[in-house]
Length: 343
Image (cartoon, rainbow, N blue to C red; front, side, top):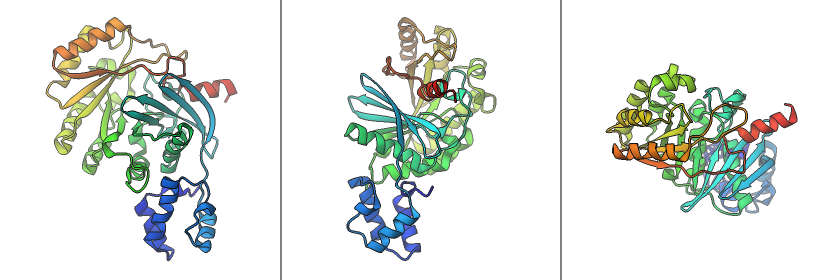
């Protein structure tokens, strides 16, 4: 599918030049797509009829099909169907600083993190850039509000789909388009070191988050298979090099799993591991799912873990719990749909 939403402004301008049109015409189309938000090429009334005919013949403006929505206080979870029948999720979270949207980057995931619902259904394919863009457009249309922050933390490992997510970032960051501020975009990775290095060279200004979830190799090997390829020592070294090159602070995500990685000793070990690194830790209460055996840590344990990090001068926050009444775990809504439908 040659979706018009797959093109950054520069790519669309180059395309238009190749077909004998002007950059200005491409800019007009971009404006119709992202400022005026039309649904058909025929609505682009300041374009020539022959150009509209060409666009109709060579591009698609097809959107995502909304399958299911679950809503709770400050959170709304969407299940979308793609043009080929595959399913993905996006999650809207309302904060005091604005609306944040977590988008999926792949259909399924091959990273196999033991606690993650997404990993139960293996990767089918990468999402193309337009399929990420359409998640954002569909949610903004639904809520009739602007999404101010975007995080690539949904189904899939973003750095396993590097080129498409980088093009997506260009499209949504463009001031002539959706205009999401570069510091309001976050990419999360479980630790694919070569792509962290490549991302550092890009110097985009986009926030980088590392899914760490363990203070040592013994625990991380058990819950995150990626650690057997890129262990914690290598990962921390790459993060330090990233910070040196970009002068940007890195976030470490740490899901607290009851009896697995949430002890006081784990907190002390994590503090020592991250000492002196320009970072902060986002402690995440685990969203339980009936399909996996892991349980969330109790509030006392979470508070004690937090206090130990603070005592050791580690910048740390506890992420607000979202979606107690929805299928909150990443990939859970999609997984439940497959279970219900027998697919």
